[in-house]
Image (cartoon, rainbow, N blue to C red; front, side):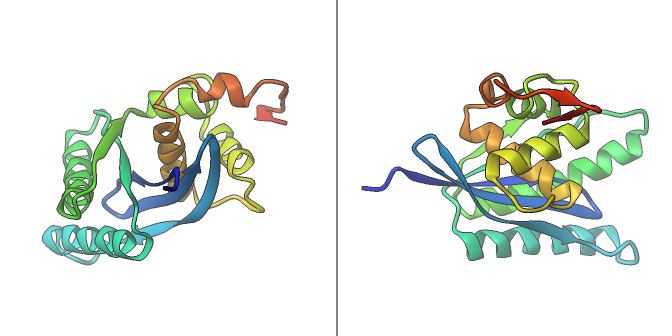
Length: 177
């Protein structure tokens, strides 16, 4: 019996939905894949939702995750943007649930806390820690990095990794080194 758990992280967006797939083997995290599902601004809203639903379903079929983690929507000053983001998130969750995956949800604050060690971390710090934790040779796109961070947060129960992973690291020019 293997102790490997494959986790799919999703960073939902109407134009770009990031995905990141990692394996948790014991306490070790192993990078599997990452990328983005993109919809066209020229398509109608229903067509864009369909593109995202089918794209996430394709990622699931390709990588066969055991669990999924999705970033929660934050309410911003533009209600229309919040509603559109919620619809994109709904499409992603529908694909995940439709595939029979258990879905966990994390706020951006929880993800940053788990990956970097504090909830107010800059996107660059999150991306840098994702690269360090997964030993990536280069930085993934911002959306893919956010999705990988969501998967990492889930792998560590949504909390506490930052304090462990940053032990012995220093901050130089706003980046962990």
